[in-house]
Length: 426
Image (cartoon, rainbow, N blue to C red; front, side, top):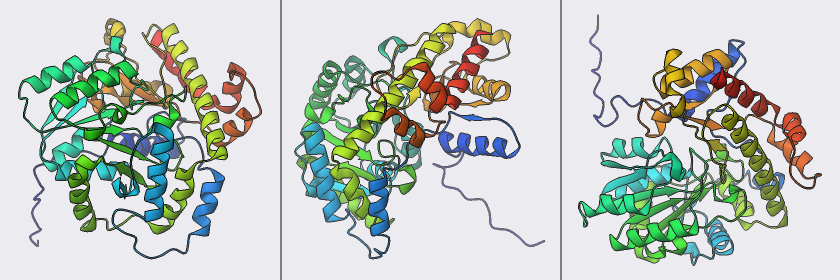
């Protein structure tokens, strides 16, 4: 028998599994192939199609084959800067913008080039902390409470920073947030900005869901702490183009040293983002009346679904407040702990496994988002419906979208949530 190469893995990646969101999607697809009925509320992929005029732009530029600049197509960088100026009143220029193969990759490179600790709320998106582990950075979790809608308080951030005031820190804030759908208020943003300025923190404001805030009133913390905030966005959530893999970062003048360092790493790794995708993205970021209508209808549908689902969970005994945006809910079943234990369920992993086995509803455990393993919390992504049909139907209706609309055009989500609520209440 021939000797084989030894297993010599970097210690930082030993024990890491596939991202929880991708893993649940693959498991759901496996169960579907086996003939099981599965409601895919695990992977947070937009249910809406890429707008047709953006797809047309991709077709028109399909023959573009040249490598583009590392920082991105100049025309696209101008369009992104204009987008932030129109939407948030930001003073970014094209020179402040960096284009990457998804905001996820840009976040990884940021953590690689920045020397300091990562600070994130619990719960937070599943990939923030693993990325820090891969590059060997310490992670500090900011505590939150269900009563505060899982949003970190400025006092908690101040308490952490007071322990070592001069320590370099990168703080990631996401609003509206994955996994819970709540958004910061102006008062909360100003308080967090005051703490960030006091300790000279670098903030990464992940605003990938900003255009999906139901009332259309998203505010960026960069308004209140412009000198220390990098703004992150992309096409995956508000434009339905997750698989296109295009993300954007916008840097203030004071953080151009980070942009330059990230560009250096990008030049030695992915080189540049796909040329046809970048040319098509110009059309998306330029916006216009058609895009405004697409976003308005997307928000209407998601807001109606969120309210419907929250009502069902409340009726099943789960304390829930109405959410603000995106397509997520993060119910905490802790008040039902005794009932769950009688059913042999001790924590979030067992909760999601039992739910999938008994009802076919695929969700993600709160543990994957930084919550204690014993806490019976889970994340729901209400995206299992044909977004194209729903958009077309909603455009012809005035006023609130009623239950009949949701059952006809978002029926799988409605059925899944009814199954989940009945299972909880049983």
